[in-house]
Image (cartoon, rainbow, N blue to C red):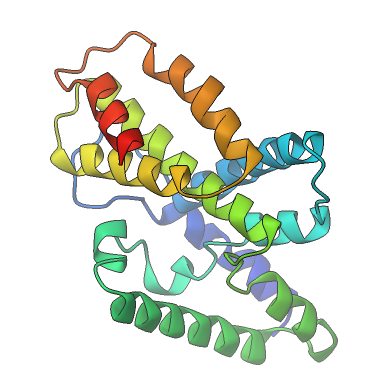
Length: 209
């Protein structure tokens, strides 16, 4: 019993592959995804600060670096399944939060339990840090799907993932979202691609919704 169990448990995130069951040119683990989300989020937060926002950086790093820790217990559930209904999403979240709570109760020393409960909580909320996490998380879906489409992967799921993530990002009212849509996304879409899928058209359709 102790924090050692938590540190050892992190190996599990390296073994969980995102978007299971579909052909992919590149495999991405949950651990790699979490690291990229932190990188996106800190740049997005810098953009927000340039526009006058006040960022709680400690909170931002805690929620972005730990936002998928619960997948150690439940695995990576595909986004279309997870969000197929609000009721299912809530049930999955309850199971995940319950298993995290049990892990903390059984393994973390008493004086650290409040810290772990705060750090491993669901971080997506209406705070600016929670919204940045939401954008960063969806950005990684955009990049993962785009990379597959760019290489010529014709799996429909990556088209859906790319489109849906863009739609969700567009609906979040932050300065960093405007920057992403106006500067980063056009640069991405204009890269050379081998894809038979018309990525530019899909992008335009998603942004028009």
